Image 1 (cartoon, protein in one colour):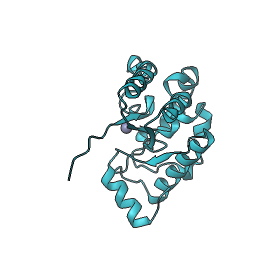
Image 2 (cartoon, rainbow, N blue to C red):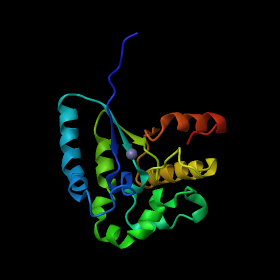
Image 3 (cartoon, rainbow, N blue to C red):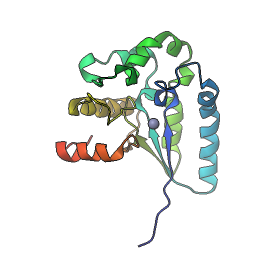
Image 4 (cartoon, rainbow, N blue to C red):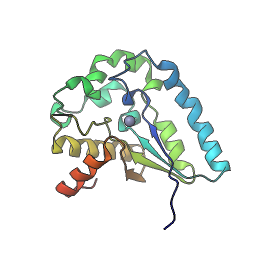
Length: 181
Ligand SMILES: [Zn+2]
C-alpha cells in the first residue's frame, strides 16, 4: 500500500482563537490571512497541488447579528461558556462590526472553492470544542446544520465534513447518532 501526502489548512480568522487571544491581540496575524491565501492558491495552481481547507462557518456571515440571531437552544451548552464563540461574538460585537475583515470572508472561501483541486471542509460553524463538558448531541447537530445553511447561502455546494477539533470524538458522534450533515 502506498502512502498519501495530504494537505489540509484551517481557515478560521479570529473564530479559531478568540477565547485565547481576545481582540485586538494577534490582529497582524489575522490580517495576514487575506494576503497569504491568494498567494498560496497561486502556488497550488502552478504546482498542481490539491488541498482541503477546513473553514469555520461563522466566517461566511456578514456581521455579528447574523450569528447572534441563532436561538440560545441551538448554541453550544458548554459548562464553560467563555469557550463559546457566540458568547464572544456578543461580547465583542461592536469590535466585530467595525473590523469585519478580521471575522468574515465569504469572498476568500468562494475563491478557494473556485480554484481547481481545492475543496472546502467544515471546521464546524462555531469552531466547536467536541470534548468540552456540557456539549450535547443536539448542539453538534445544530452546529452542522448551521454550517450547511451558511454554505448554501453562499453557493458553496462542495462541502466536505472535516474537523480537526478532536476528530475521534466527532466520528464517535456521527456513528452513534447515525448522522451525516
Ligand atoms: Zn481550529
